[in-house]
Length: 259
Ligand SMILES: [Zn+2]
Ligand SMILES: [Zn+2]
Image (tube, rainbow, N blue to C red; front, side, top):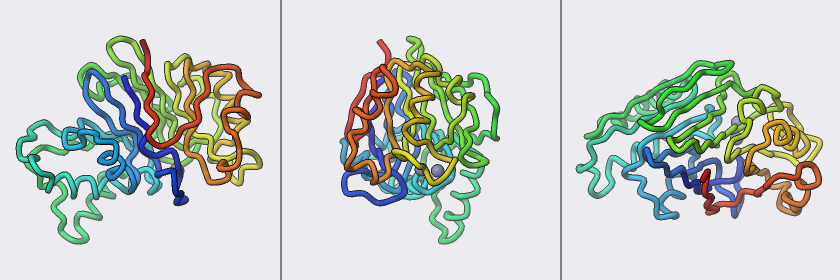
């Protein structure tokens, strides 16, 4: 699998960090993990084949994770050559995605679902730990609720070679989430704040490193970085707390996952 960071930022606009979005290229197909308002443009900027995107995962309904979904459906509808697309676009994620899209669609009769390929929506209720299901043929997914929003979910993906990626998206500290992420080849972990976080529903550095210590991923990618990180060497600070492979996310970063 190859991961491309589209957005390492948050809901706060930032000159060098788009809001959440990760492109994952796998043997089974391409997946977009979270779709902020910035994500569609970032896919184009990275020259990714967004017209043939196979699946989208939406972790929760905060707009820095899902606001690009309706614009993506609106944009793909008018993309040159899209008439040749026959395969479905599969949208997976938390409860409420369908309701959100329908509300936008109805508000101006956008006909977002009136495409010449099928759009499937698969929503998952909050789950202590949902066992594997096929996100795409040959790509297994597991999910678990995170202490961030009632609907928020983390996802664990495993391909046929056994390579594993976990994306927590937004989360508070949770040993269950750490356990869920155990031994992943790549753990994409939010690290919203440096210290003195203003909410229990996100992580600060010490929380993130406690999760890393419990999960022991082969590579740790720290993301969802608020502007307070701009003047801090995140990797250096993180290495004081955990000795594994730590990477601070930046937009445009590409990482190989697994063997
Ligand atoms: Zn967020
Ligand atoms: Zn959030």
